[in-house]
Length: 470
Image (cartoon, helix red, strand yellow):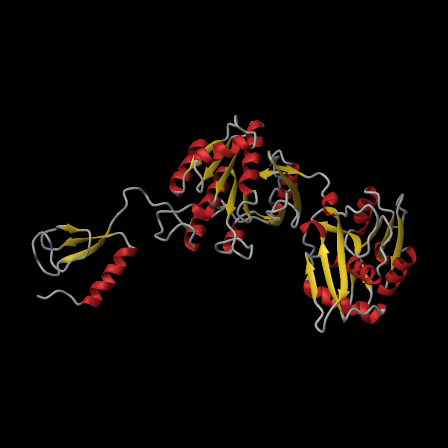
């Protein structure tokens, strides 16, 4: 009998590549690792039957729940317990985490290559180890010798942090079960792979599967786990979006690699405030927390200059002073509007409001706006400071020394209040600012020592107040 056609053979070979199978002869019982038309043992045609290879080890349940199964209970009857937090030894990192690492909590941290993710985590693990916590650093991108070289460069040459260079998921889980660390770091999740899947490490299936197993391990054993994630060209975390839903906290490392300052921002946090930021400075001995980040984003001018206005933005629970700079110059037939750190579309809207309600025309001018220090401001409370900086640059008159402003500007020309205005004003007074133009709804009932407040309701009132103070 002639062998089967090529189409069927190709289909069978492709299926064999995906599944672990053997082929057993129904005549002599011989086994072949691949499909053949004729049995190699008894030379009989078309007698090989496909059979699945049974694993000697019991298969782990891939689809187990991430949390322990519990009985149905009424929400009011469930006892709410405060979570114990373990400080990492870095105040800025603890601020972003909501006070420290939580037992069984899973943190996903991402950022550009070389921005300092591994450096910060290695420093945090060393601090935890020195405080008596057991730690484990699992590296899939570097060897143990490279980690040791970095630790010596950071001044941690005698660190007792345990290091495992491994990318196979089963071995990592076995090590976590054997060592039982309090905090473990997986650097990075894109390098880890499971033998239950045939796809390559870093694929969507592998990242989702490995993250699910590691999260399940953290919840079951109480290990505080940190997963390092790669990012794409546009700065988002690589891999499936479900990865961010699966973990408890998502942190992003921000900042320019050419600058010494780094920002760690919490995008998601089940145990703390969202949009909280931590500010770090890169030094020869690693990342150091910045206790007064407002000093980074404020001007260094000896005297006031045109086009500069300071505002108070809110990052999580922290009020922070940022300098807004504007440059208005004569443009050509198509004037440019460019903003760095601020919304470009909102800048065009604010220029229209400035012309319509305050009578300041910039339709034939190039307008450039920048938030100093590389910080990104997404809240609308920066509107008033942007308009005042643009007007100051256009007229060539600087705002007075110690001046600040904040408030949202509407299309009708009204100045709307900003959330938590009292905290913003107290922070400004603490840093020595003396004059503030704020929305009327944010004016404090009791005066603040050393701070003169001008409460306004309209854009034209704010322009008049700034003109009288200049």
